[in-house]
Each structure stands twice: as structure tokens, then as C-alpha cells.
Amino acid sequence: MPSMDRIVVVGASAAGLTAADTLRRGGFTGTLTMVGDELRLPYDRPPLSKQILAGDWEPHKATLRPERDVQSLALHLKLGCRATGADPVARTVTLDNGEHLDYDGLIIATGLRPRRLPFGHDLAGVHVLRSLDDALTLRAQLLARPRVVVIGAGFLGSEIAATARGLGLDVTLVDVEPTPLARQVGSEIGQLVAETHRDHGVSLRMRRHVTSMTGENGRVTAVVLDDGTRLPADVVVVAIGSTPATDWLADSGIPLGDGVLCDPTCRAVSGVYAAGDVANWAHPLAGGRIRLEQRTNATQQAVIAARNLLAGPNRALPYAPIPFGWTDQYDTKIQIHGWCSPDAHIEVVDGDPGSRRFVALYHADGKVVGALGWNSPRALLQHRSRLTEHAAV
Image (cartoon, rainbow, N blue to C red; front, side, top):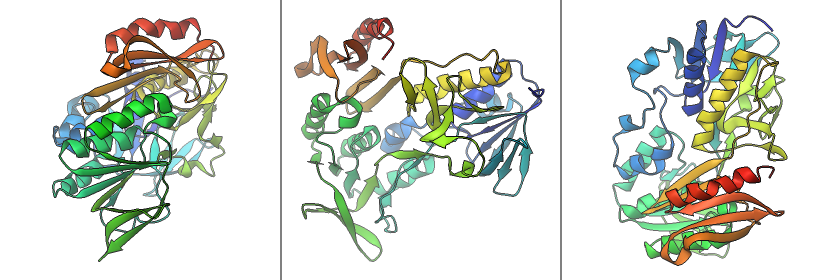
């Protein structure tokens, strides 16, 4: 293994910044370069669909570290630059400005790009939400009190719908699934999410496909569903999922699939590790490969990837977390440990769904594989140990 004098981190969000911090804390004193395609210092993404979009936070509050703390890491910051290629044999990363960065170690933390519909995105008023600039642009349009249609009722779409409704707007939420969050927590809990949105005045259109959008003078006017329904809309937010940002690696020889394909230690090829939403690794307990789009995973995996890069492949440790994620909608906090598969059997073990305060365990193949808390953070922690008892999911 070559000496570790130059490390490049591609991606300047939570995973990238955590990796850089871990490298410095781990004793790396060489040249540390971090590449980010935005001009902003690293910021947190979960508040974008909630506090930033609602106007409760000024944009600077989403920044992950004060500028002086970032400066203390002695980074060579390449902000506003996009990585366009990597060569793991020559150990170089190419940027869109033509610059070539030599490295001894590379950490890929480029995250996700939002999926788009094959139509409608050329119309003014049609948005995706991934960046802080996306959130601020959408926020400015919500101030005009538009009619809002949100396409996609996963975590992001449901949060956007809740935030827009909290601003007193006319909001419709559309999804092909039977309930919001059906893919994330199953339709049984999803039905409670649906009721929560209806209780707050959101109109739901479930089991419906969007077939087109109409516009006038270049601006969206309606969303058309597969049953012919036209939903009047001044603002449309497309939240139909994301794809790992790996296009820049297409010709690199680094193994790609649904993300950067890594071994259990987050290593893709010699000297190259991945962390966060872009990493697809062989989870020692999950019985196969997984990729997690969770804020907690971004930082936890970045720590392990950075430590393993410094340790070398012979001393690297596997990364085997129990996943944890959450969503905040209205006055509801839903927290999830483990795998809450839609086809698992659900058992309420604390509280009552009718009171909107409970804990449910998810069972599959005779094991507890997931735990969900609805406004019950303390009770959920008491049941989390059931996951570690049957960790071989």
C-alpha cells in the first residue's frame, strides 16, 4: 500500500465533511482536498424540507460547521467544482475545470441526484428539492400562496406537503402507492400517515400515476392523473426518489451498481472508499448489499470509511450498523430502527396507534427486524435492544 500523503474527498456534505474531520482526528497530516459542486460550505439537508422551507430558519443555520471550524481542518477546498472522472490506477480525480488531483486515498461521498419525470420540468413552477438553493427558490414561490401539488409521498414528499400545509396552502399529495410512506414503513402505518395528512387538510390522491402536466405561458397550470383528473397547480414539487451520483465514475473501472459497490469495510477498489447515500456495501448482518439514504448513516459510515482508509485493508473493520432514520411531519415524529419492511408483520408493543403515540416492532422470518416509534422516542429506545438480539436479519 502506498504511503498516505494525499487524500481527496469528493462530496462536500455531511459524509464528506465527517470523513475529512475523521481523517484529521485520526492523525492524517498530509494534503487533504475536498471537492464540492456547490459554492456553499457543507450544510445539513434534513432541515431543507422543514425548517428552511417553512422559513423558521435562516439559511446559515443549516451550515454543518462554522467557517473557522472548517478552516481548522486545513482543507484544500474545491467548491463550485464538479468531479468528472477518476482513474484508480493512476490515482487521479479530474474536475470540470480541467484540473487533475493526484491522490493516495480517495473517499467518494457524492450523495444523490433527484429523479425527474420525463415531462414538465421545462415549466416554471415545477421543482425538485435537493439543495439549499432548491429550498430557497421553492420557499420564495410558496410565499405567493400557490396551489401546491407534491408528486411522491415518501419521506421527502410527505415532509414538503406537511410544511406547505403548515403555511396554510392548498396542498395535494399524489403517489402510486396505497398510502404515504408505504415503501418505507408499510401500508398499515402508512394509513396512519394518510390520516394525519387528511386531518391537517391535505388532499390525497393515492394509487394514481401522473401522466402529464399542462402549462400556460411557460408556467405550470395543472397536473394530470391516469384517471383523467386535472389537479390545478401553481407549484409542483417532484419528489419521486433519487439516484446515486455516480455518473462521473462511469469510465473509471470503479465497480458501480445501485451506487458505488463496496466490500463490508466500505472499500470499492484499492485506495478508494465510499460513504453516505452513494455507498452500496455488503452489510455483514443484512444478508446482502444495502444502500442507506439516511442522515445518521452518512456520518457513521464516513467515520468508518475514513478510519479504514488510514488503517489499510489488512486492519480495516466491517461496517454493520442497525439503520436509524426519522421524519417530522406536523406535530408527529416517526423514528425507525432497523428494517421496517412493507411485508413484515407489525406488532404494537407500547402505546396505542389511536392516540398517535406508540411503538411497533416489525417481524420477519421469526425475528424482530425493525422498530418504529410514533411520538415515542423514549419507549422506542427500550425496545431497540430487540433488534440487537436478532441482528442477523
